[in-house]
Image (cartoon, rainbow over all chains, first blue to last red; front, side, top):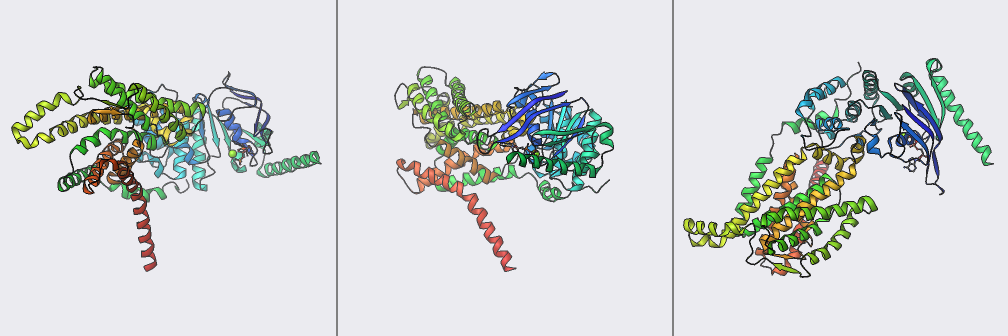
Length: 264
Length: 354
Ligand SMILES: Nc1ncnc2c1ncn2[C@@H]1O[C@H](COP(=O)(O)OP(=O)(O)OP(=O)(O)O)[C@@H](O)[C@H]1O
Ligand SMILES: [Mg+2]
């Protein structure tokens, strides 16, 4: 359902600050996949998301979403099919608007904007159920300014907004990283529940090895703008936390070594 | 199930807030009474009320750009005189004065559109883009007024004239000749108040529509809005057109009140708009979007009244008006800041005492 073919992105090309964030990257995501993505800081994980979402243009390569070449589509158009949750809870919400107004915004996704009422009474029951199923007691506070919620609460609402219109693809960029362990666990639980309930295709970036093997059906490790390995099925099932750490370490040092030899 | 860690901090911040009754209406009444008493006591001409109402939509325009869109747009300095000039020329050529209000709105909106396009297509910063547009708009205003710097409306039919004679007759009949002098001011106040109320109601309705909701969201977080599949460039265009349309409309009201259009009418309007916004926010502490819109408009009326008072109290010549404006604006800008610092200082002192 999503394919990246030979995608390369270089920032500050031709300057001393040149960063090759993605290098000839290939990735094929099947409908219904729940992929976890790991990799060191600067490996290009967020850039991968930005390229798929249309925030960052590609230098070369193609992006195919649901059989359509979207490489040159603007971000807001692709957003009709893609739900996103960011690491920073502030990025996903609009302070000053209430929870209900946020859900109303999300419900407008893909609709022609008109002069009808922005917050529709006919949606009230739906919103109530949605927020109730998050299980944080927020359903009684739908008219609270979102700026008054904690990071975890905001992230749960953002996740609800990203999924409620059942997007084809859900992309989560370390969406539990800013939360305390409890809140993080709850948001992760909610993520898995929503993905199953709606049958979503999910790509989730995480720095927690535990999360990476505990959730989903496929695991990808990235390094220096490439997919280093991509495991699913039995291989992933039998993978242990320590195996993963080991591979993470060895691949990194191996990479550094080869770099050093290249330099000398 | 782990202990619910979501429900800790925000409750404490919110609980006392929710229990407070809505004090907005009360504040509104208090401000109205205080301003009224103030004007009576110091003998401030009620003409300043009409003037404040004519300019009040500029406060709303600045609210839309600075607060909703969070875009530092100065274009109102250009949109205001263009709206006024177009209105004056149309009235002189015999067009219905009521119709010119719509035309002035459209012309102002067009000015805002140009600023929006300059920022979006040429990636010029908003502040600079609007300065460029203001500069260009000056020439356009002169062209509209056929190279005259001033177009008088003497003897022309404005939106005020149909009511002036009957109201004067009625006042003289019921309250004696003493009311003669105030009759035109009263007509201004009532007519402008009606226009402004209609516009404010429309805006409040609009801000609650789908488009309005997205517009408000786009201002606070354009990233989130793009993630919902909204072209946020369109929202910038829409907001700038709406705001400057209001400035153009305000310009046409001002021209009909003054009885002439002038090329320099817009100079420093943005500062007045900002002052109105701040005065309204400080005195009325609006919360909902409707309250915020209303506060920006009322802020302008209060601003004009206090300026008129400063003027009268110090018996200054009319040529000093700009400096007085600047000082009143400065105090409006500085007051919230100073109050904050004073409170902080008091808190610190109390802490060191304890
Ligand atoms: N907009 C940008 N401009 C310039 N360089 C960028 C930009 N975005 C990312 N980079 C660079 O591209 C590289 C990959 O960054 P990216 O954010 O994709 O890493 P990441 O894998 O998400 O890392 P982290 O785990 O720290 O979030 C980094 O070296 C980063 O500095
Ligand atoms: Mg990242």
